[in-house]
Amino acid sequence: MIHLPKTAAIRRKARVQHPQTDAQAIAASIGEPLPRSVPIPGPDAGAPVRIATPYAGVTPRGAPSGFFRDPQAFRALAGLVPSLFQGKGPDEAVRVWVAGCATGEEAWSIAILLAEHAATLPHPPAWRLFATDTDAAGCARGRNALYLASTVAGVPTERLRRFFSWEGGGYRVARPLREAVLFAVHDVLRDQPFDGLDLVACRGLPGRLPDQARARVMETFHASLRPGGVLFLGTGESAGDGGGFAPATAADGIHRRAAVGPPLPPLPGGETATHAGPGSRT
Image 1: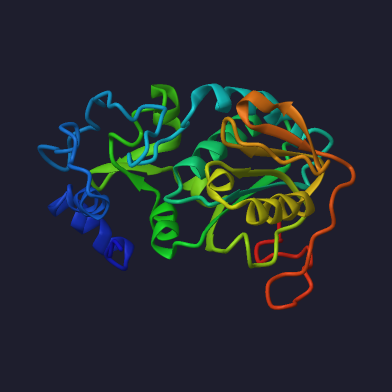
Image 2: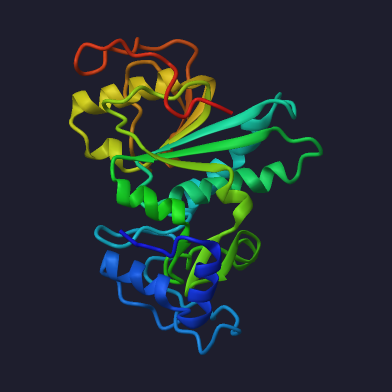
């Protein structure tokens, strides 16, 4: 876990005196060497030129996660984002859940798509993104929102300038996005689901689960999504054949929630599942 100074004043002082400290701690925690673009000659220097890495836009097995992993799938998702806002007024909210968020790169990628579309609307609804994982340390890193230059290599320069700032030897997600995203520890197999969601993203996890657990996860997502809501899985991952989802662009892992579907079974331990999860607020 990365321990950062506790007050804003101390953080600012630390960044001036030791501008690489935060990025070095992140690099050490994930076993990734600092890329050549990270060192800065002094606190007044601008952000470095990013160096392309093998992880730009794709995450090989064992490699650090990246932003907009699988660009084709994210382009397909971006095409569906306007439908999440359709019919919602300024007093309503678009609600999104990223389950199995790891260290947050995918959650922030989706947040950028939401922010970009909201900016095109004259009176957009609010939007809220819940990012969850069973790993508390991963959630803490996502919440901290500071990433190495190699991790943001897949982010186009225009988005990098708009949604990130150079800070502490790395790129930090801009405050407006950070205020709209909540990171929390949550077990999708055991904890109560969120409800009334417009989009659920869970990429990679379903494909690693046994059949019974995967079916349970899909039932949870079906219960969490509003009718017509979007399920964003990994490329090649299936929502199952239980009738709860209809393919939208299935080749990119995108499905729509059907109006009806399988009932949500009891939670482990005999508890009755409800549809009011720990983050079900606007």
